[in-house]
Length: 121
Image (cartoon, rainbow, N blue to C red; front, top):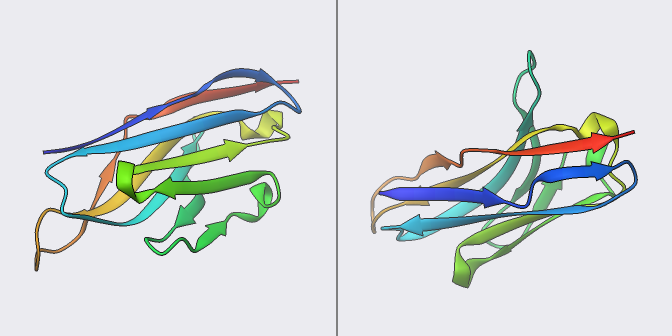
């Protein structure tokens, strides 16, 4: 059983900062890519940032220079530092991870339950 639990969401004024964290737990053998998505009502889930097991990162254009994704492999955590927040960043943020439960077994994606981020103007 694998669980991803996010924390750190909340209400912040435009221009402010928040840090989201996500910890993976359970019978994990190895974690590949870790990702942050966000979703607003009526819209498709959007991939915000990705970090590989080796530390390579990618961002959607709208957050480049403002958001930073990082991970701690020893603690099975991924974080998203969000600076210079804008009202359009308001969404439910989800972490996801590609995880395998054993040597030679395939990877599958696991998801957290989501955490609300609200940026007021």
